[in-house]
Amino acid sequence: MKEVSLNFEGLIYYIEDEEMKQMEPAVLAAHDMLEERTGAGRSMLGWKDLPERITEEEIAKIKVAADKIRTQAEVLVVIGTGGSYLGAKAVIDMLSDPLYNMQPNSKRNGPQVLFIGNNLSGKYLRSVIEYIEDKDVAINVISKSGTTLEPAIAFRILKLFMEEKYGISGAAERIYVTTDAEKGLLREIAIKEGYETFIIPHDVGGRYSVLSPVGLLPIAVAGINFEDILDGALFARHMFNVRKLEDNDCYKYAAARNILHRKGKDIEVMATYEPSLQYFIEWYKQLFGESEGKDGKGIFPAGVTFTADLHSMGQLLQDGKRNLFETVLNIDVDKSFIKVPEIENSRDNLDYIAGKTIAEINKVAEKATCMAHMEGGVPIIEINIKELNAYSVGQLIFFFEKACAISGYMLGVNPFDQPGVEEYKRRMREMLKRD
Ligand code: PA5
Image 1 (tube, rainbow, N blue to C red):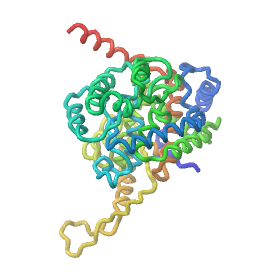
Image 2: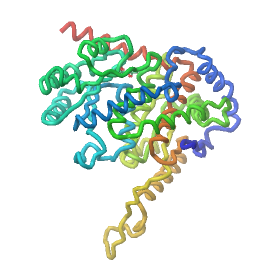
Image 3: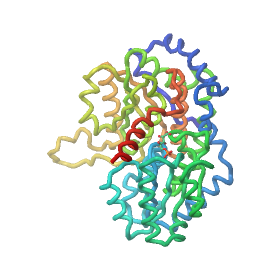
Image 4: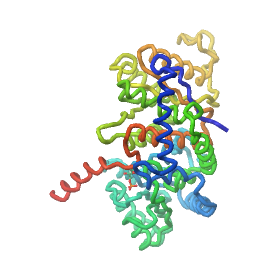
């Protein structure tokens, strides 16, 4: 069933129906480049097929490893950066209890999941090591290239920690490696040490890899039904492959952002009213930032979590430079049912909302903010998600991956490479070798 849809009411002042229709040839050209594999980066289109390419054996292997980790560890430490951690973190945050990691073992649906190797903070790493010292631990180190500095440093330290704690063979029982099938130092280490390995397909780039073992293993360890995510993505793969602009919400979204961009809107602000989507927005930022930002082009992907950010970014959004548009991730159903209590003679002036659920009030905040921002000159795209569950999250992931590919081709860039990322790495290596 379709769980993800679009609402363009917030664009009425900004995009005419006719302008949208005029985008159809460009959208269909992008569709054909993807389908016929004639566009830039054509060797990196494996992400499109992940939901149907995964075999029964691969699913079983992930389940067996996840079950083993769930029995052997109180904490799973995931080592990876960029596309090698953001998807898993986003999905676990969206589909688990907001205080998942803080719950006692008896209440939690799996081990705690901690992410390291995505920064160079000694303070953070020290703190994680001290935290896991007296706990049972498993590690999933994820790096396609096997050479990325941040996860490589974290893994060197954690490998030693595990070997000191469990012995070399005991550590090998608890270290799981996700990397390229053939290339890379991480594969060499995994073979030498006898670690269990999972493959990142050679034709899937990091930021498009959440539906491969990169995302699926940590997600499964957290007790989330990853097959439902794959089912949702598979449905989306068909639904968002329709070669007709007016019948394809994913293509309409890609077209709308490109029209707005041509009209001087250089920033897309992805907004959520649900804090558990914060990392989904981080994932979106990486997906679009690395895919579109090149050759002097690109829409800057930003993110806000409302209502918190209404008290920090609200002023700028309402009243600042009109070079942005807002994309709101609207979740229709919130089943938390927590209410503002009715209290007699209360002096807090809240009687006018007594009896309403927080979810109802949040919805009103969302409607009121959209109206205010629209009137303030901000075009608004609304992406509706019926309810947050594994199946709808699968659809949402595929929706954005496909939209990003189409939007990137429409912009005239290769959405599947990231040559710019190498620049800082080269300089950093030079400086470290020089010191
Ligand atoms: O999208 C990408 O390719 C990157 O963001 C990578 O995911 C990130 O740099 C990590 O790379 P690796 O998995 O090779 O360590």
